[in-house]
Image (cartoon, rainbow, N blue to C red):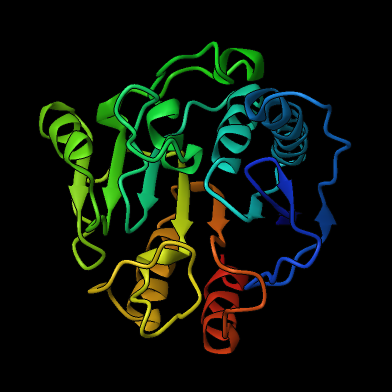
Length: 247
């Protein structure tokens, strides 16, 4: 297993990002002056290369980042290594917004939609990302969806599941994505975009452990979308380290 720390939120470097598990190699890139899409392309090209190399060594990469965009580099890297992964996406949010539907314009609300092939000219084509079919994606634990996301998901083949019902998931190999805001903010304060009503730490880590133990997961992404210095991660770190170490 190889663990990478990607201390960025979108194209902003976060040198003091608190990781909820131990990490090894840190991905740091001198980003060019330009728009956020250009800058994120440079960053996630590096992520994709690191992930592809790790899988080529028959290792299982864990990518710890300050947002969900690192999933693009991770999945692109898996594909470069010859895998065609399905995606199991734990998140309180849908992350299926588009430039045409987003009311806020927050790019962190786009990555799952980008993985399906939306607007490849933004970043996917430059990474060599092959669109993941909707029927090979499961969205787990989403409870804070904007109206355009509700409309899209109602017509899409993406499976929606709860954290305690992980039946009928896509076949492996899998990219397992865990945005830690899927955990109830009462148990994990300090998230940038908290969504009340979620499961507790033990419930989420048990579900992650179940999937890792299945043997279907080829890469794991942890999205730490929290405010700098605002998160108490001791219980989370103990729980996550336990299930990841056993992977």
